[in-house]
Structures are given as structure tokens and as C-alpha cells.
Amino acid sequence: MKKCIYCREMKKESEFTIEHVMPQFLGGAYCPDDFKNRDVCAKCNSNLGLFVDAAFEKNFLVYSYLNENAYSFFDPTRPVGLPIRCMGPCDLVPPHMTDEEVCEFWLGPLGEQIFWIRPKDDRLYWYVGGNPRTTKTARTIAYFLWSERSIKNPLLTWLTFRDAFEGRRVKKVMCTTVEGSDPTDIGFSEPDSTDRDRITYFLACCSKGEVRKIQQSMYTKFDGRFFAKTSIGIAYSLFGEKALSTNYAAELYKGLWYREGDPMPSVRGTSPLSAETDSTFAKLMGESNGVTFIIQRIQDQIGLNLSIGTTLNWTVQCASCDNLTADDLARIGDGMVIILYKPLQRGLTLTLPQYMAHKCGAHINAEIVEINAKANKHIDYFKNL
Image 1 (cartoon, rainbow, N blue to C red):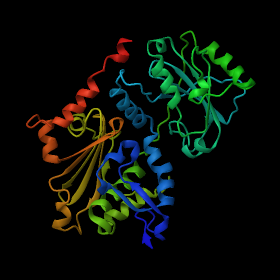
Image 2: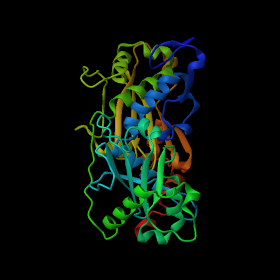
Image 3: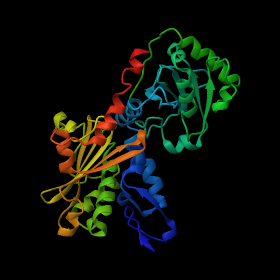
Image 4: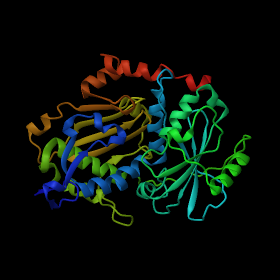
């Protein structure tokens, strides 16, 4: 028997699974092994992944910036698909759609249009793509239209359409006639009578440069539970069980299990939506094409800074130094920096002095320079098509 670091319940060891403290959607598979542990029960791993990590990942701003990281490393000489961009629920009402459904508009890399008809979710209204649990189990339908620009790189469109909605029970229907290839080879289905009615509708509404009205919703507390969870995981990974027995850790647990209407926990930090956000500081603490975690001691606390690109920046106290020893604090030294590049399947670990020396130009880090060169190599590709 052992205790889960999130629910704090004693459970059989067989009920535990590996937890990426720095989530995989941010590139956590490529962070140091110290931040992957087996002290999280399967129930917490699943439920917190769906309703804490996903609440952060599926926020429109976060989702969009992470998608742009994939585009920044695109190489037209390598045949790979790119993520489709979610624009939000739109004003189209295709035939046979019910009041319990929404038509969500997505864009492909070359201007392709995708209309996903999925269940509406008033509770998780801000999730890009809706409730992840529902869309994994409910059968939904997406309609795909090529664009004139697709002719410039049809393989890119083909591979992007192949990879779209991977892991979800989505029936994919092609609205464009494709000669020389069979869409069923990349997961498309033959249209039925309802699909044919909708194809006629989409072609009539979406082929002549019509204006679309799109809605985006924002829940301003989308990041609270995520940073409570991440702080608990990082504190435990670095300092063990003692980091979870302080008064501040109790506030983090209140934040992790927060429900609308509960008293707000005393978790210290700032977000990109805060008035205290400083754009110069954000640029100093992150990489334009990566996800940057910085962990350091700040007086009597352990601080975490997370930057997605150099625009979205969060700071949070992830632990108190109340019961930490000199040996504990030596684990992070003068500060630890982890930069994750998920599109490249790569992660870098530096000390904070090394990173600041690079950012200030005093001592350039060759690996960061090499990665940034890859990101900028084809920066004009989509603009020049």
C-alpha cells in the first residue's frame, strides 16, 4: 500500500501508474526522469488529466500557442501533417443538426475548412473541441473541404486530414472530390444521405469567400487547478513527502480540488490575464518556440515560472521552504531550467545562471541557437504560397 500524492488515499501499489508531472501535451515526455513518478493512482491520473490538465490545454489561448509551435518547426521537405486550428463554434446550422449539437469551425494549414458537429457542453463550454470524455466515446462527424491553396502542397493537406481528430470517435467525411487517391485510405467514410445533404449545404455556404461569425468563450479560472496540481507534483518530485505537509501545501490541495463557489485558496502567483503581467519579463523567461519551466528559490519559497512561447507566462509558488534542509535546496541549486520542444521530441536542462547568460548574450547556448535556427528556417513558407 502507498499514498497517492493527489488524492492522499492509501491504495494498492498495483493501482498506480506513471505520472508526467510536466504534462505530455507540453512535451513532458522529454523532461528529466525526476519529474516522472509512480506515486499517482490511476483514478487521479485519468480524472485529473481530463478535467485539470485538459482544462488548461483546451483553453483557446494555450491550445493556439501550442499549435503554433508545431507550425514554427514545419519543414516542407519532410512529409508530415500539421495540427488543424480551432476557430470556435460558428453560425452555420447544417441539415439534421439538433439543438444539443454545435458546429465547430477548424482551419487546415493551407486554408482548408473543417466543420465538426459535436455535442454541446454547457459545463465545459471553454474547452476547444468540447468535453474530452464525451468526444472519446460519442460518435461525431466532421466535414472537410480543400482550399485553392491546397493545390500548392496537396500532400500536406492529405497528411493533415489523415491526422485530424486522432484518438476521437470522429466520422470524417470529404466534401471535396479528390482524384487519384482514395480518402478511405486515411480514415474517411463514405457519406450517407444525411452527409450528402450536409455536403451540399457546406459547398453552398463555404465556397465563395463568405463571412463566418465565430464565438469563443473564456473561463478566467481555467489555470487555477492546473497550477495547483503541477506545483504539488514538482514539489514532491524534488523534495519528497515533506513538501506536502506544510501549511502552503494545504492551500495547494484546496486549489487542486477547488469547485466553483468554494473559498479561494491562498495560492500565490500571476497569470497572463493578470494586471501584473510584464511582457519584458515574459520574453526573458521563455523561448519563442518552446515551453519553458524555471524552478528557483525566492527567499522562503520555491517558485515556478512557466512560459509558452514568450507571450503566455505564469508564476506560482510551488512549495514553502519551511521544512526543507540545505540538502533539499541543493537539488535546485541556483535554479533549474527545463525547455521542452514537443514538435522536435526534445528537451534541454540548464541551470538558471546558464540560461540567463544565454538570454543576456554573455554566453550563448549552442543547442538553443541550433533549435531556433530550425524554427525560423521556413518562416515564410505559408506567407509566400
